[in-house]
Amino acid sequence: MSKFYNIKGPGVVDGQKTTELISPTEDNGGIKSVLLTNTNASQDATVSLFIQDDPASGATQTYNLIHTIAIPADSSLLLDNPSMFKFDDFYGLYISVNTTDTLDVIISA
Image (cartoon, rainbow, N blue to C red; front, side):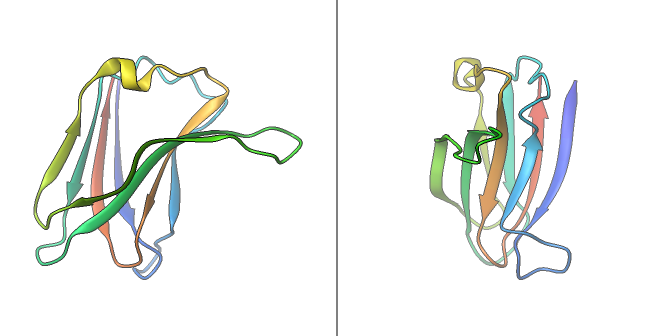
């Protein structure tokens, strides 16, 4: 199972600051790798990838896998250590980007 995403920052049409990649109720399917590709030809993309639960109380717990990492223009970052993605199914996987960032994300399981 692979999942594919086009991520756009909030300053890009139809973009947003944070995007849910895998919901807290969804089986994460044994993620093997995540490929983050900066599709902007001239500026770095600043990316945070994190897991977060979604309790009824509204008091979420958030844990960063990577935090404010700059991916150079026209470059990719491959996260391919499966143990990094072993988290309980009550956590979802999210990505957060800066205002004008554009990325492609491929999750492989």
